[in-house]
Length: 237
Image 1 (tube, rainbow, N blue to C red):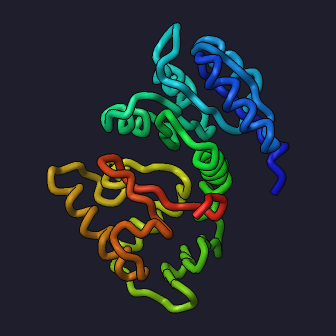
Image 2: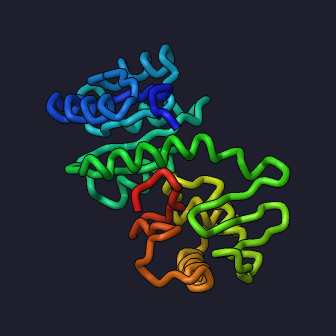
């Protein structure tokens, strides 16, 4: 699919990084709208209605999290946070406030483009599970939402109800990092102290049944200390 219809709003105040990202995106066929602060970013977001936002957190006029609050009041536009902050708390806060993904500086060109493709895929994927007869396909993994059947290389695998619900939830938001608390609220509706361990045990069982080993990111990426992200076919493996 051609990228040239995708418009990306880049909110970044460091001129060298802004120029680098703009060059990377433009070379790969994306339209780029630039902002160096949060206030201008909000105005451009409303007027240009971009397909994706790349957002720095350390902006000169206010914290980038204020843009997240603003954008998530009425919009589901994918937002990719790009920040020098590497603390897990910053990542979890950004993701729980509505960011789709979090990339730390410095970053590689291939990684950035893969995350951009994954975030754009999220906006196309989100409603797929609501369509009657819809299926999710990633490499040799297939999820049939209506029949609640998961298969790998054409062979059905037997998941518990909870395991299926976790896998289906991740697939419905493929490309987006889902924090532990987000997944737990969706599956169990609670955040008791044992829930993360319970989630990790279920995830280990899902990986094993799908034929992957710990550390194998063929389908699901474990964002350590943060949560999980289902891969998309748009990403580099």
